[in-house]
Image (tube, rainbow, N blue to C red; front, side, top):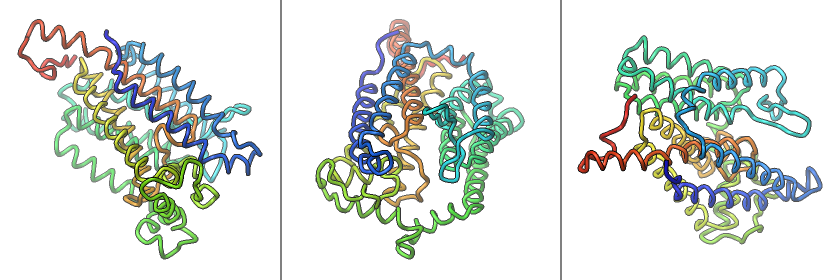
Length: 381
């Protein structure tokens, strides 16, 4: 093994520190209003960031190959936690997504993303050429994802379900699925998402707000319009750190789902463009680690983790900028949310672990096959 990918770690450090600053600025008003403490949210976010950093370092130093043997137990534990959440979980905002122990709360759905990635990487790796068949490839894949999606939708959590769907479909394609299988998946997945969106009235309201927020500016279109107003107020360079007006209860969930709008209002287009560039660079770096992974399991694992970060960032920023409908998904590394931050830092630790195994394999290939490209020698076992 060699050292981890330091470019990856630098990107994560910059995003996490930016997130802590943004959370403090966006949350002190609501902290004063709800808890008479302007530091309420930032103290908790910092504690979770420290915990997540410890998980990142531990996972980075861990041999990721062991995760292949732990895939089934981890998935079993995940399913148990999701069921436990449905039975005794804490309800807030019409959703039952949290397990509360005293003053500590945990959202199992955030860790479900990583657990699903690990399990699916191991499962796809074990399929081999049978993946291209219907009975050994597509059918069991649909059953696995449907079971997880059902548990998440009972909470309900359409945002997490959609992200997991995007991750798993990408991994299925990367593993070698056929064009016909992918077409069937995309068609059935699209129909399922639209159907779920139409079942509940509030989801339909979000779609209506996306199409015509101006028709109901004080109702379903309020969050969309206020987010755009906040971004517009910021202009190119922003009003100044801490000077946001939107966080005074104009932008709903300003410290969680709406933090990108507050960042744009305070620091302007310069900051929001920089954040987008950081995420794009992180995505490219992650897929490069996947391409250079020493085996198929590592390749699929890195692909899934990178897709997770990229998809979640796109869904949040796209909703705030009205590119897609709002879904209530936090922005990775920046939004307030302890479980989300710890889970994604743990995922990055696994990605860093994969990056540590590429150097020696590539060096060995170069010694034995000097003219061979790294990607041509991937161990498919």
